[in-house]
Amino acid sequence: MNNQLLSLFQLCDSNFPTGAFSHSFGLESYIQEDKVHNQETMLEWLKAYLHEQLVYSDGLASKLVYEALMNDDLQQIWHLDRLLTVQNLPRETREGTQMIGITMLKLTESIYGFPILTQYRDEIRSKKAFGHPAIVFSMVAHGLAVSKEDTILYYLYSAISSLVQNAVRAIPLGQTAGQMIIHQFIPELNQAVERIKELTIEDFGIVSPGIELSQMKHERVNIRIFMS
Amino acid sequence: MNDWTGSLSLDLEDRNGKTVAKRVYFQGAFKVMRPIYADDSGQVCYYLLNPGGGYLDGDRYKMQISADEGSKVTLTTQSATKIYKTPKSHAYQETEINLKKGSYLEYLPDPLIAYQHAHYKQKTVVHMEPGATLLYTDILTPGWSPSGERFSYDSIQLVTEIYWDGRLGVFDHLKLVPQQQKISGLGFMEGYTHLGSMIAISEQMDAALLDELYDAVMTVEADFTFGISDVAIPGFCLRIHANTTQTIERIINQCHAILSEKWNHRTPSSLRKY
Image 1 (tube, rainbow over the protein chains, first blue to last red):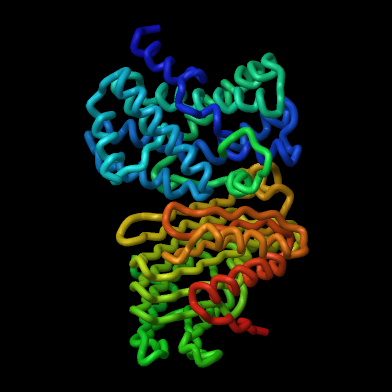
Image 2: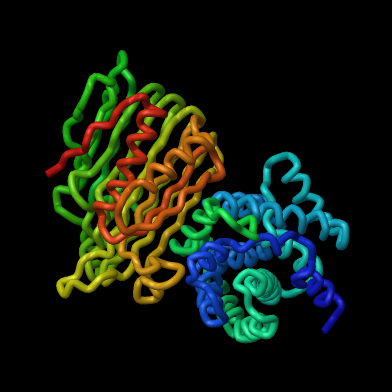
């Protein structure tokens, strides 16, 4: 393993303080309705979330942003930033993702100092962009010369592992069960990357109706430990 | 790609408090019936219809609607949109709506019924000036097959883009491919059969209205589940999972009545069709 990759691993750590630990992206609604209540149901939810939502939004965006960076096509990146934000119809999930994106951007700008990160912040400051973690992550990975495929894989890994940590606290599950889920999920992540490689912008933003509905419902959940 | 099976274009304007068409054009298997004025509000209602009764293999439909300042219109269909089997090429509908400030457009179509082995794609693009109002709804049914099997269609794909003041403000992409997805399971239809959506955009949107709509939907007694949330521009999206078209229609009608009173100062008349 080289230092570049190790440097990106810092971002994949669920302790990297982006605020992702405060967001369940609709999972809490399922937990409250007792549809997700153990290792098995969590795994089922996670598969739906990854293969039917994340792949078409963050996952595909991560690939497209990486390609746009290779082509120096900044307009395409700002377009994807808007698409990612406006396709996220549930308010809490949209605003939560934006908050995570901006926090991640500030941190990574300080750590890595890549000019593209500063440009992204300027776009956000002048209200021309919103901020999204998949874009920040891809910018950092590209800057560290990590391959496109690995960029997508590690981004998905970081999103999933932080959700599993949240599930461990919320369901609750034992730490071992949490780690088992992450381990069992490795083939799913690879499968998702293979799928993303085949997708084009025409596939962007396909939602999973049930997951989206649960993200909207979360606004009305009375007792909550997550912001989304 | 100008070989449309049917195309329709309708440009509306306000003439002394009455909304009238300054241009109507349709050709092929797409038709608009004569305008209906249900009350003295000046708001016009048009029924769209497909004289063929349904969409066939490779059919392509195009609809263009524009509403000038002050014009108010209800668009609906005469009956459900049926998509028959499409062995060679998917059926496609493209809609473009342009709304000037101070215009009001509500699009309340009947449900979509895709038959066994049907592929359908729909793309709707709305351009709104701030100050315009849009109500847009969709109802997806589990389709139809001779054996009564549900979700026997091949795919339904709906793409909706709403531009607000020249910038993309809402992007909604639904794609149901029952053979490839666990359609009735967790994450998809969650055991329900019908999916209803309403997207409403207006500068008059506020938090109190979202609460009022939420409470109104909660009073509907039927088997359904729903979510409602603010989108990135002033407005909201409502999604409903239910087991009948009627349940979704009741919920949509409830919200439509509230929005029509608040945003349009008008009590909607029933869209009687049968």
